[in-house]
Length: 380
Image (cartoon, rainbow, N blue to C red):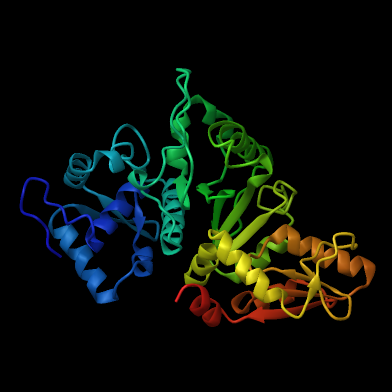
């Protein structure tokens, strides 16, 4: 790593070391275990972390079995001066990114956002402020709304959304970690990690309503319709998906359950498989091509059937494409088949199959997509 010896003492913007610094800055505290998910070999990344520490740009904080990297005062100053457009909002004021707290709940929140950002990066989604349109600017009532459009997938974390100002008072307590904007859809993003997420129905509904008001009926009304707002849940693995699908919310119903808050609630794993599916979902042309391939040897969907479907097989039975692990849709499909005593087929990715097979009743047949072949075909 070539770190300049000048005033700013920073690595080049295109370097892996600068990427690590950027992630630490926008996260407030970057979980040490997420470094392994970044590009590059393990030994090289260990060397980079040591070099950044030796230059007193970052430091490691360990408490309550949580280990994370934080910027030093020197690191904050250097980044703010070198690239204020990207970092100034995160490294000023009494914010959790500028002055990260020490309570374990606050740190877990920062780690959850950081993990989400890594997954977005792995899917080719823009996460840096200077690489995406400024959508959540404060409304000062000054008149003309800037001409905005999202031409490439972009993720805005919860800290950026708060820049709306007083509007965000309505969504205090919401568990969303940010919003993903693709060219056609709005995803409110959650990260449940390896345990059930705390859930407050009314707060999440206010979050959904705010996105519809600010984006679909306001700043990006020419690009998004209100029905474009969906939800995306990230989690540790497919075992966590099974827990979410079967959750009843706990004794006090204070944990996540499929309560109808979103008609579409996609679940993706925080790993390479999840990144590949997310990359696919962010590209409408590639998604359409996959649907075309899956539809080969099947008949057109029947919109009048007793259960929603993407196609009909040779026996006249419904088929859904569930590679996106849309939890409400899978639940509706499974319940309808069981209710009517009919058979149907669910097509999913190979890594999703075991958990979905456990969840679905005997009336659902599982067919799988080979993830290696899918990635080779669409992202060689």
